[in-house]
Length: 217
Image (cartoon, helix red, strand yellow):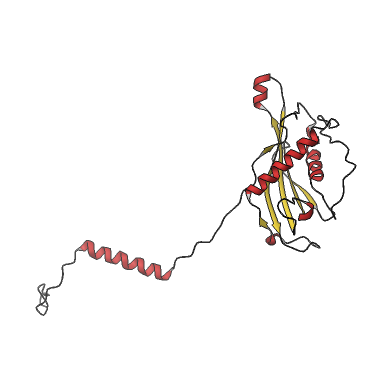
C-alpha cells in the first residue's frame, strides 16, 4: 500500500490546522451539542420576604426590674387580645420555642379584626415573637437588674378570600418587611402605653381591667 500524499490535492493546498485549533473546534462543537440537548431555563423570581425589625416595648418610663416569668405567656396573649379586635373566627396559636424567655404566637382571622393598617379585606395571618432579656447596659452602669421586653413580627400574610371560612395556605401572600415593622412599632407603642398606666402590675405583668372590650363583628 502506498503512502498517502501530503502535498496539495488537485493542485490546491488547504490551510494548515494546528492541534490546538482542532481541540478548540472539538470543545465548541461539544458545547453546542450540550446546549441543544439542554436549553437554558429562564430565571424565576424567588423573592423571600423577612419579618420586621425588633422593637422594644419597655422604653421610656416603662421599667421592669423583676417579674414572675411564668406569667409571660399570659402577658403576650393579653397584649394580642387588647390590641386587635378579635372575633369568634380569630384563631390564636402558641408555637413551641427553645426558651421560656421567647414566646411565638400566631393570629389568624378576618383582616377587619386584625392589622387594619395593612388591609381591611380578606384574611390575615400574623406571627409575633415576644422576648425578654436582662438590660446589660443598665446592669453595667447601675449594678442592678432590669428587664427588656421586645416584639417583632416574624411573618405576615394576607389572603383575598370569603369570610365564612379560613383560606387554604396557598391563598396567602406575604406582606413586605416595611409594613411589618410599622405594625411592630405600633403594637409595641400600644403595649408600652398600657404598661404605663398606674393600675398596671409590673411584677405579675397584669394589665388594668378592660371593661370596654368589644368583639369584632
